[in-house]
Length: 356
Image (cartoon, rainbow, N blue to C red; front, side, top):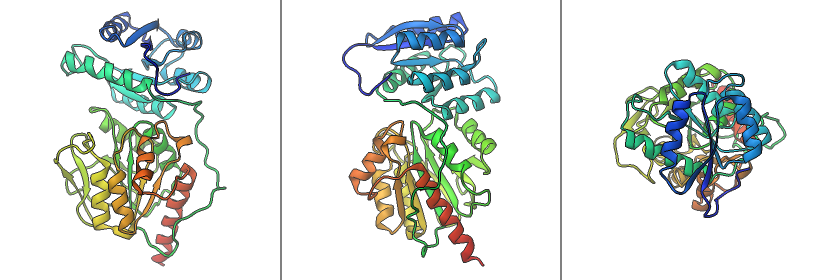
């Protein structure tokens, strides 16, 4: 089982793909870095599961379309029995495969990128560098047995019933998609607050991420455009390469400002602009992710009277962003996903009552 930061030994990688050519290319790229060791290859799903049990790799690269067990089934078995950081490598040649990618992430895979190769639309050197960086990064993440979350109603609801909230701003990175799935699936279909989301995601997969959320949740999810209208239940997602900001109580905008904390889009921009426009009528949420993105902006929102929440460590794939928010003073404590959902449901119910 992968368990936190590794020692000085190489990162041990298992490559899973039914194509000998792809396995050769991935092995050749990874072997260029002396800090990475390819310990095995599998050409089908059952073989992959057996090799994970036998080799205990630090990271597994995984194809989605394979004989016998497909990538979804492999992800589900591995994350239940031998939790291992999984990087999905996809050819992304059609829309359905991209949908399947996010289904795999919702079942416990950590990240996705397009398979390296001469026809993937990017420079070879960029593709090689990205693959090596992602493998090293994922090897530092402690993963735990993954079972599809079930929401129970036992935790206390802490939202202020006297406040009418109009807007929800969410920041997430690694581990975010599966949490967002559970969150949005658990909200009422007539959810009455506007929603904006910064989810760090590999460029090229943003549209399929939005379409996946629209398909599996009751809401319209879309990549935000400048001057997009804020509507109840509409999920506006920051596009790669631009910061998502709130212009006024009716519209969002896009900013081409420099990256913040190495991120563009940055959750800090979203939270800061939310605090300026909505103030105490906004809810800010930080979910799983690496780094400090969102901490300062969430603190500003808290200072403006907004309700702020950060996910507890036990439910995070990576605890960096929620911990940074707490260290910054942006939240008073940590919340379970169930508490976050219940708070949002209560905010929705309060707003609906206020219209009567």
